[in-house]
Length: 245
Image (tube, rainbow, N blue to C red):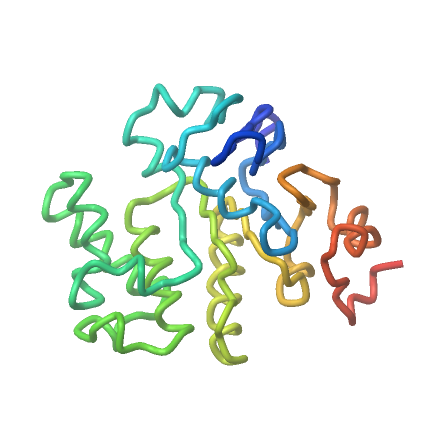
């Protein structure tokens, strides 16, 4: 991993109503090649924070930097560097077939047709989407939808993949599909930020754990360091992790 942060959040604050802050001077950083979990209860500000990481929302105070550059100076380029996968995959889909869905992002980047075709082929093979290419995304199972949503982001070749509650609503097979996908992407060097309130499915695979509550960062460190303290922040401690003291 690189010694300098891939992404850095500095004292980020945001309020939707006067005297009702959603984010309160949030600061943390992500190293290249890391797998970080951001955990907290519903309403803790996790999704709002996610939307600030590639400029979808603007903070009242503070800033986000990507490779040391303020993202507000990067224009649309930041949305290619930092790819967001939303909790509800159906809301992310805009096309009528999986193949066209995978092509949507690269087409918006105005890439040459041959490069778009190559990216679609690569993502299709990487995520095992061959049999779905002519299917409607909305007709797929929960796990299949999530893989297509991830594929649509990967086709833009981001450096950071951010996923909001990727296991919500999935059966065990769907969870396994998505988790296997993330493990393989991480092995290949993808930097991952996984936002969740449920640590049981992913804690064993991550490097870092950030706890968030009431719009603030409560604790950050290695998974081993932070896990014993998660219940103080309303997060259930996962069972069966033998290395946890």
